[in-house]
Image (cartoon, rainbow, N blue to C red; front, side):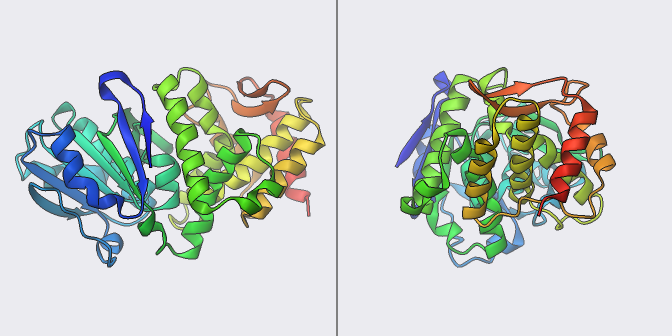
Length: 349
């Protein structure tokens, strides 16, 4: 099926299907008909997969960057752009990102900045990539100071979500990716009991449909799109601390799951929701097999400092929180309260 992201002349479809990657040539012919060269950017691990067969219909070359979050750096970006420049692309040519969320963030930013913007196709191969990172045009890389601090909005001409690629995901990648799925399920008001009759494909479609609708209404995160950051204030703080130690210590979806469990407890402490909402969150996270506890070696003081420097903080602590009228962005949350809730959260069994 196709889910549309409606942005006027920059609208595009997210294709959700087995074998969606095989539509690459058709997509380029329809949306970038003047393209003569396609550069397919992926990682060594993805390039070694048996399904890695991309046909663009035009001259094409494959470039590789490191696997994982370490690829989202200015050094890797510079190296990629130098490689891209060797092919003397024009503004009509195409970059194609094939990989997980970190890869599509990096390639998206490269497409946004090379020649001040060239055509981009995203082929996300991970669960996180398919339900979140590759859709909506948010691209970027990390700094030591925090996640995604350097980036741009640059919409693709199409996104091809191939269900066949996620069938080969390692178990940790699959479970971790469910963190973003759980976020969407919770935003939509779903309960754990309802999940018994829902397939993974259905969950991906639900998540993509929600994100496409929100991006269509708020492309540049001026309002409703901020809801997609639910759970991300603590998640990004966890990732920042983890990245300083080991790039593979904590995956994005794993951090989001912990952030969701914390955010609902913060909402309860602020009197915005009662304990039934905490139970709903915990049951959904447990259904997906997601850890919802802060690892012991993440100090509260370090996490508070990282949250205060999150790019969405606006110089105070800002969270997306549940409330009587639904979810909304709440700024100016008392750091002492946040620290107290975080400490209590740590002590839960």
